[in-house]
Image 1 (cartoon, rainbow, N blue to C red):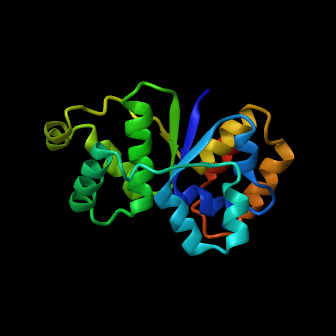
Image 2: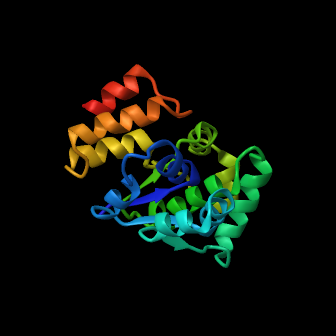
Length: 186
């Protein structure tokens, strides 16, 4: 089973932008979903308690604060990429340490373009390798649209619901191009 590791951009999109259905809950019926404690706290700060609790009833929250390599990597990334938020970094590190490094099936799901660019940089970052002893050979990453498409392909979301999602996204601040709409529709 392929675990989906969500950052706050995806969770926020599931609350703010896509209001016609709870795609995180739909996802949880097919895939295990995890995130970091930092993402949970970001969501708590941005939404009321009822909304946060409802969204997280199907997301396993992982606390890596006491994991030594996690703390080292977190400090490294916060210093090297100060424009990234703790949520994006911590959920990325969850994917890296608990899945990529252990060769377990996962997808890291983020809409944060800065984080996506950093992941590409890290694949060729010799300083990262020197400090932590491993290179990122591959890292499985997608965004909200990619996750929605996967749910559609698996039959968890209908064609009508895809059309409703597209309407929601068009009426929001979510970055949506014609190519993304075509991809989502299949």
